Length: 112
Image (tube, rainbow, N blue to C red):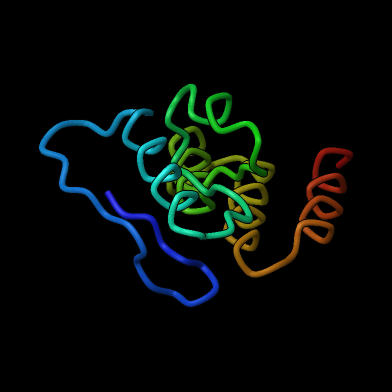
């Protein structure tokens, strides 16, 4: 498991885990960062259940890779319905735009 400095693009904390990662592993990493003078601007995670609540003092985002993966799971890779194809395209576009633009496009898709 690794924690990356998104500004500098380097790994600042890591831990070898030979089992599934747990909330306590994330908390350990965050505490290490806090104790070593890092400013934590937000948490981006793969959606480990309960993690957002445990680290609620920080802004939290579900990783875009995993968001796309979840949508693809429910729609399949080659959806048959026009609405599903449009939603999948919008999901792929999400990683190339900002929040406000995506939310506007998503709102238009919902109305349509």
